Length: 320
Image (cartoon, rainbow, N blue to C red; front, side, top):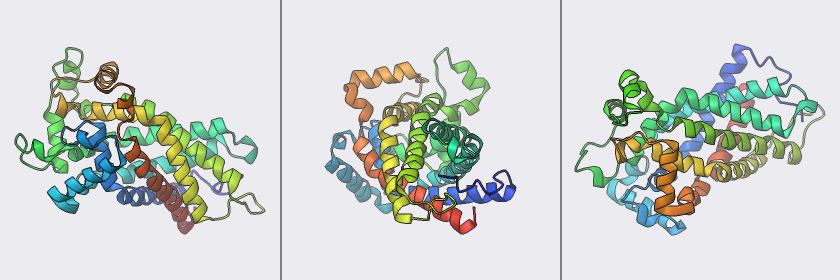
């Protein structure tokens, strides 16, 4: 398979801007489709006490969503979605734009395309996008984590600004971290960042590896080696790619969620990797690292399918 971008100047501003725009719009469309499921998954992963009784079953997913809907209506199901969109557009734009750039640098010709290079291109693009957008992810998680039982201590529903301010003003008393947090408050927006980066390597790497490999294997190409537009094929391959990537990276995601909401659940502690893994293992064992995985599959399949298909469709519309 010859890259669709190989015949263009991928370093031009025209290409970079349009590639990023196509990716950003695709990411927002995909996230909107699965926003209610995303909120339920966050509540399960972070062990929110109001919803742990529903975790572990498919029916629990819909019962949890129904309870959220009864308490707060559609607004409750979309709680934190404004922060999601603020994060997802630049995240997806950077990720897909970086993938186009890294893909062409590592694999400028058909002969140079290998599974290892596809994996590396995906992992690198994922890490780049996370670095620039992680604080928005932290704010979104805090907004989604708030439930009715917290109203007594925090009666105001967390807006984007309120959640951001809360994160900035909270502190940790651990001797290993308090000096850093006092001197560099911005680090509070990077709780769980290291585990996110480590988890992003298998997630983005496997996702793009599966995407590129399956398209090259199953979708027909024209006489120039370019993949023939096939929206249905893109949807199907995107779904499979997302499911495989989710399986490979899910334990990292659970650990990351626990660390991200650490300022709420344990405001006097800066949870570290080992400590967080230990807490999950002691409370739930091995299954604790896969809590909410059923929601993850239910969410990731349509989200990744829409994301990849919309990305390809957007690139065709914008001529990249």
